[in-house]
Image 1 (cartoon, rainbow, N blue to C red):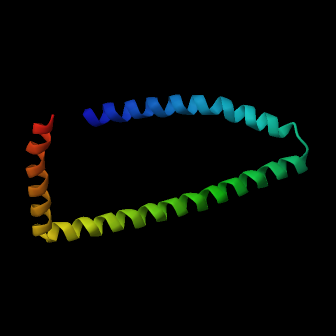
Image 2 (image 1 turned 120 degrees about the horizontal axis):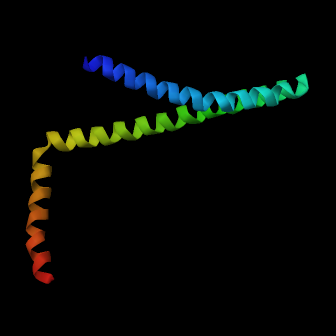
Image 3 (image 1 turned 90 degrees about the vertical axis):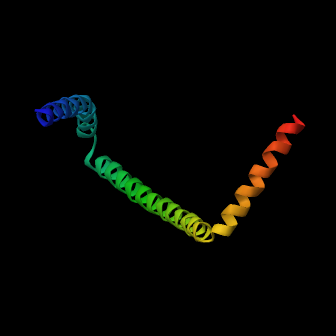
Length: 104
């Protein structure tokens, strides 16, 4: 019963989105149909280039993010396996906190 309610709710959301997008799609199609064929082709080529360039920029940023996350994961793994480093770091931080509080 819960699955049916979720599916009906999802269908309502999709219907709302479809109704919202359909009016703008009709405006765009009517706008393109009122133009010359060569202008339509130029607009479509421009949109295709924009989409391809955007795809490559997205891949580039995703690749950089993947490298940064890999480096952070390797550093975290190294620190996790070297428990002396973390213990000494935490001892140094906890020892400094009371001195910092006394200075206030």
